[in-house]
Image (tube, rainbow, N blue to C red):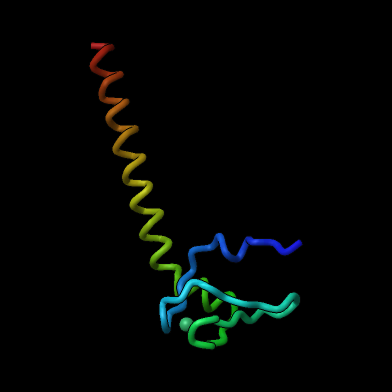
Amino acid sequence: MKDNYDRSMSFQCPTCGGESFEHDDGNPDVRCVRCDRVMTKDELREANGARIEAEVDALKAEVLKDVKADFAKMFKKWK
Ligand SMILES: [Zn+2]
């Protein structure tokens, strides 16, 4: 059985934007299926870091907004 973990990662190739990568077991390098670029997993993660952080920040802002709205409602009830 082949695991699909790598497919669930939404990493993008910094060269071509491809999202399919191949890697051999025990080899830290990954290869972009579309443009053949070879890089380490760390390089790939770093190249995608800014994008992932932006997504996390957007999510945090969304959650924070909801939490603040809930608190505002709670405090209004207590007055
Ligand atoms: Zn590529």
